[in-house]
Amino acid sequence: MKIESVTSNLYYIPLPEVLTDSTHGVMEHFALITVQIRDSEGAEGLGYTYTVGKTGGAATLAMLENDIRHHLIGEDPDQIEVIFEKLWWVLHYVGRGGIASFAMSAVDVALWDLKSKRAGKPLWRFLGGSNSRVPAYAGGIDLQLPLDRLEQQTQANLDRGFRAIKMKVGRDQLSEDIARVEAMRTFLGPDLPLMVDANMRWTVDQAIEAARAFKQYNVYWLEEPVIPEDFDGHQQVLAEGGVPIASGENLHTIYEFEKLISSGGVSYPEPDVSNVGGITTWLKVAKLAEEAGLPVTSHGVHDLHVHLLAAVPNASFLEAHGFGLERFLEFPLEIEEGFATAPDRLGHGVSLDWEALAQHRG
Image (cartoon, rainbow, N blue to C red; front, top):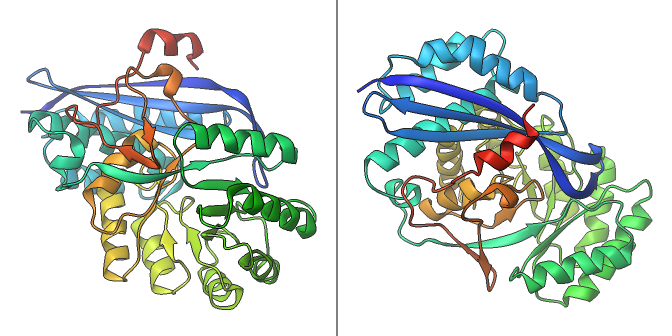
């Protein structure tokens, strides 16, 4: 059995509403890059990744088509680790993260989808999972929403079945963030988990000040308080700020996660399967977290991450992200009483509406 064809495409997906955070500003689109891998027996696996706005989408597609595709043709698709290592070293001089990790992630997801389909199992079961239910939170991208609109959004998410909420922080004045967190805690009541996400906005000292201010509102975690490469800074914020820290969505290699976890600067490692090197690396990060006694969470692409969290023993919350594909899916993820359920369809079970997507081809 060999890989016979590799097809990749780029789409610019308009968001249903404008989203905002402290780093990326106003977001009206995201780029979706898909990869379809077909083997010599006619089976096919689907992988995908995404970028913020339109930046990087064309570069990721170009790397897939010009630098990766011909290295996959003729390979045994079951040898996923071998293929990962091959691509890592083919791309290492221009890679070791960045665009290369995005492109490799899409390929890796497609290979795992193909392999679990051939095994006749849903991905989460193929990876050893025994419980398909995963706690989920609604990940708001809402820094500039007026408070009344923020509360309306939150109520809509509660009505959809969520029992945990994340909001953005990182406004120009910390006092504004504190007031919004206080209002959200009052709106949710004392018990529902409330996460806050700064999107790397602060210095270490600013992050410690913010964490101490948020502590009284029982925040579940403070996410990405400082730049992702500042591992010592993460440790300082966690030690002195007094609230748990989630981080890792902007780390793109296993080596970076090794440093983050070993530094003692994270409570909830947060790998993103679409940019960390795919399922192969995501599972390694989850194992590192387990060995350190830490729960693992997720970022983005919730239709994939629900499988991965259902498969590992140290799963925390699934993020249901604002960059969703619900309008283009035959089977959108459903939330009930705070839980998402990994589907029993073969592979990851994501079935895209290619005709609808074609209207947004990049």
